[in-house]
Amino acid sequence: MAVISGSDMDPKTVQANTRDHVLVSWSTQSQVKPMVVERAEGCWFYDVDGKAYLDFSSQLVNLNLGHHHPKLIAAIKEQADRIAYISPGIANDARATLARMIAEVAPGDLCKVFFTSGGSEANENAIKMARLMTGRQKIISRYRSYHGATMGSMSVGGDYRRWPVEPGVPGTVRVFEPFCYRCSFSQKPESCHLECVSHIDEVITYEGPQNIAAVIIETITGGSGTIIPDPRYLPALRALCDKHGILLICDEVMVGFGRTGQWFAVDNWNVVPDMITFAKGVNSGYVPLGGVIVSKKVADYFEDHYLWAGLTYSGHPLACAVGVAALNVYKEDKIIEHVQELGVLQTELMRDMMKRHPSIGEVRNIGLFGSFELVKDRETREMLVPWNSPSSGVMGKVRDFLMSKGLFTQFRWNTLLAAPPLIITEAELRQGMAIIDEALAITDEAAKA
Image (cartoon, rainbow, N blue to C red; front, side, top):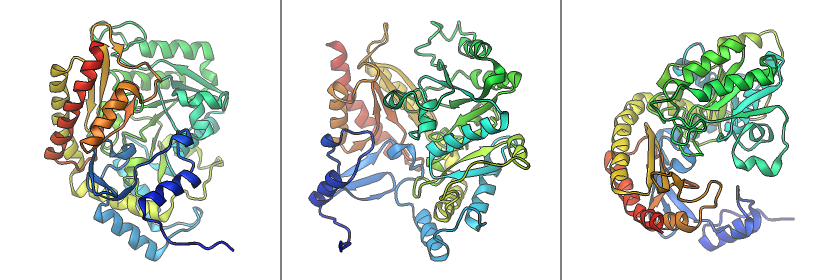
């Protein structure tokens, strides 16, 4: 009989066990050499040698309230002492309370929540509900989008990670992004007539509006470099969907719950979608949780139509309890207001760096969600490294430099992310940006070559 032993804290043992027994996400397993982390608190985490790292990407843009928040930890402990798990078909106060609290801060008439274990499942179930409600099968999505790694959510994504598992779930029709810096329609801001929306309208005509259940978008495209739409885009897209009787699903897995300085990113443009999918920030990632917030129209449909959706961990009590605690922290500590204030500073610091570093082609930021787009030449906008290239070469050097200076963040091709925990102080924000400022000397030099 196998003997179950306690936790192995020796770093070499941790690395060996990881190498021998863990399949690590998005990795060639033979090349996995993970850092071993011992503890974390606030905006910092510490490796086994005691070295501190400023977390400038909130891990995977999920630790909105930082590491080891005492109120979130206390909520988990208290809930575990009462009910650690109960079937989704049985009501419990944690799930009911969190659903009410989410509905209270959601825009417009979004009023009911279907809980999932994360963002991929949230998008999967939003698509399912749209197809059930409309009786249509086609889904319009965008080429630069990422909606998750389950088969359905990956199939509607435009991210290159869908390629190895295609053809995937049928029915996806892709359109171009509202990416002003790299406009697919060769427009500049001063000449733009929202060709990106007219393009979708034309595609709808060719595909048949009677066949299209929903348009799904990341309100702000995250993984492909914090692509913030023209202020006219969301209202125009909402009107277009209404014109054709198509549901609008906004994926706010990254940007929901304060990341942009609003409860939800759609609030920046006063748009109410039919569904918002969420995860990550709802409980700061302390226990896996996601969900779909639906409008009254969608909720009413399922009053007398069967909801063909269910998950063992839908509305898990531990996850929902920490969600309740997280939403209370957002309100009591005025996190949204804090993000609005520091977001202005983050934008200013990024723009100042652009003046000093010719390798920065554009900076994009809203709230505490920003990216540096790095180029070889500002005039031609040639990317410093090609799209879909690995994070090695010059970007690998930048990553190594940042880590050596104690700053952790995420990269994607020629973009560098700035998305620290929403509790970050001004001093910590300036410290992180100063380290990035140093690192960009590497990209400036590479751009000259």
